[in-house]
Image (tube, rainbow, N blue to C red; front, side):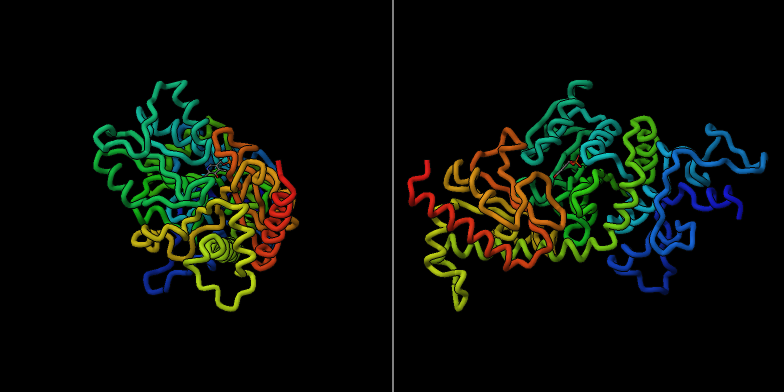
Length: 429
Ligand SMILES: *Cc1c(COP(=O)(O)O)cnc(C)c1O
């Protein structure tokens, strides 16, 4: 093969996901797909994908094979041209994402760049949105500045929505980890020919499949679980419709908000372990939440033999923590929630401390949780959320659970609550 054959053997139709196995073959499970969905794009003998740094790619050698850009058929055109259009590392990541998300996926330079791209493409007159990540509201405010679009509450009557409007549903929610019913919002959106965009950052593949419940566009901040190691910014939009896919693709060329090749490379590496990481993180979070909830409600819990559920610990946690939130505690929603999140309720939960001062202080008492914003990485984080979200209750701590052993995390939290309880005893300001 000549270098130009190599360049042109893997095509931008890699963005296409029609690489399904023949009918008589049992489809591969997601953990296997995460390892192999990009095999067909491999252009070398390397088992570990190489990092491609070029911004530009040689055109075919044969003059007769030269197709000017304005004649390119996007469905079939072969080869890489310029890395603002497509690039090999990002394309491999998109191939895996398309399989795991069950829609055609495009990557962007950040989660907010992906949301921006969605609004540029959809150009809705009205956006129905609730609480959730404050940055998404920032993007929508930019869109409103340019277009005059209106923001409606998430629970607005369906009659206020019109064709082409957007319901922007974030679930589970940042920063509390509580979930909303995708199917119910899909029904509402579609009853008005509006579009349901689901920000599923907190429910990555393996935990939640928004398309199965009626989402039209699935968005992720790939910076979080998809990247998973707190070392890359990435945004993702996935869609079922071919037309919307190519529309978004064409506009991304001019938005210019593509990911760098290093991020594409890191992202593909990260997705290999997505299921392992997310399952462990979600189980850890559920264990911690169940433990804390039992201490907060000792009357309802059967403490059994577990010494960490002693009445002394319950008194200490009761003194410092007011309330805990996580989808696993939404007992009255389990009808739909156990179908929507059958494998676990996500690795993020929130604590409301008894006062702002306690919320400021707990992070510095912990050894195993970094005090930092963001979430989704393999390392556990705690954030006094007021540091990055001016609108957040100053008593709220957001906890993003990593892959450590949950009992070590539990003991670290317990140690932190003890230290705070001691300070309260000494007359905390
Ligand atoms: C982090 C986050 C975003 C923004 O993603 P970036 O990659 O930081 O731009 C959007 N939505 C949710 C729910 C998030 O947690």
